[in-house]
Amino acid sequence: MKHTRERTTIPPQKRMTACIFGTIYSDDKLPLLRRIFGKLGEMQATVFIEPELRALLAEKFSYRPDALELHPDDVARLDMAVSVGGDGAFLRTAAQINCMGVPILGINAGRLGFLADISGDEPEDTLDEIAARRYRVEDRTLLRLCRGSELVEGYNFALNEVAVLKRDTSSMLTIHASIDDDFLATYMADGLIIATPTGSTAYSLSVNGPIIVPQSASLVISPIAPHSLNVRPLVIPDDSVISLVIESRSDFFLVALDGRSEVVPAGSRLTIGKADYKLKVIKRYGQTFYSTLRDKLMWGTDARH
Image (cartoon, rainbow, N blue to C red; front, side, top):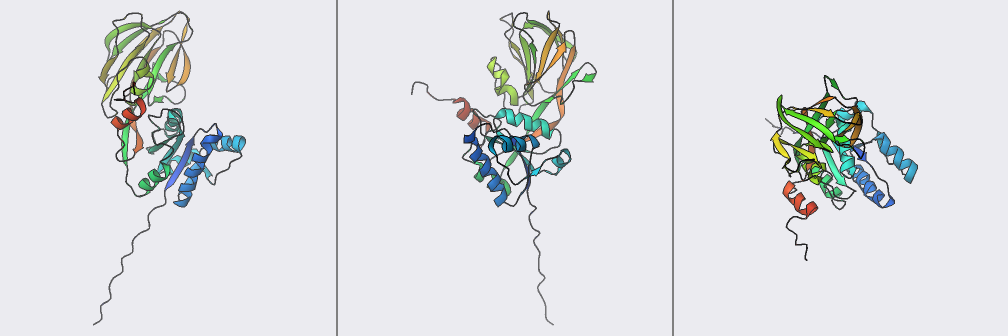
């Protein structure tokens, strides 16, 4: 009796679906973007582009990449979002991804780049590693802002920080702060920053807030130019709920979520807590928070040399 060997069919690998987000304002950044589109084309990926970036490239650079325009219903189809630019572009990408769980790869075409930390020399190698599934995904905590019982209009989440800021250059704010309904302090200052670990290297750092490792389950409250010198940044558990009541002689103040600001009347009560979802960030193996600190903040570098 003749036996035939059963043939095993290996299913083809699913084509990657990616969307390019970002901001390109100068000619010298355009070659990087072309390389990314070219590499994704070589990989036979299905490529989308956000409408704002498509319009910018067409109007300013007469560049029309071979990509589909992204519509809101398409976000759920994405395997990856690629943010090209600086950390500002990354934050805007995070706002558009929202709670859809799409991991974001940040490619740095800007300056410092803590979030967009893949350099312009690395996109091809990085995309090859992603195609081979040699990468890791970090979960990052976000903040959710409520005003009284109503959400602030628009996207009410922040990856870096929620900041309360005075609106003019004269009078400072009086901010009554409570944590889990337990009164903390009254801050007299130019403002107050509530930052995630991700945001600890952003605005909070500029007012002498501590650097927090992204995986820490913590938040930091940092005053901006406080009237009293004995007021210092405070690290609290990230499951805390922070309540703020703000007084201002100018009758209004600003609330900024990752730089997106809104004018709010004095006397308003703000509630800030951890969002019920996390943002996913793509990292290369060997790329750690500590190496980023050394590279971006030049830790351990002797300034005399």
